[in-house]
Length: 104
Image (cartoon, rainbow, N blue to C red; front, side):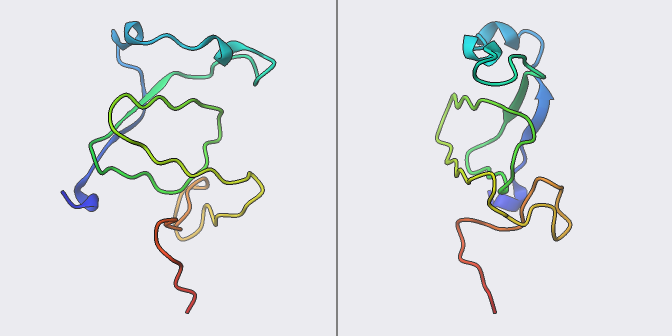
């Protein structure tokens, strides 16, 4: 289906019974790597072709892709990506990194 028709489940608590399907890696609670505690364990589920807009995550996280392919673009934290502009949430950018900007 066209991208505008795709939906995905985002930022939901892990479903009851799903906790038994994975183990949180030890390094997630290692204070030498991060804060040393887990705020939430959440799940995102999306169909083939679903694309998240360019954004930054306010909390530390780990990505585990179970099926398919996910392209992740990382930017230095000091790079401005116009997050919060053009009616977007404070952490979401209107820029599509896969399309050239029209500066005219």
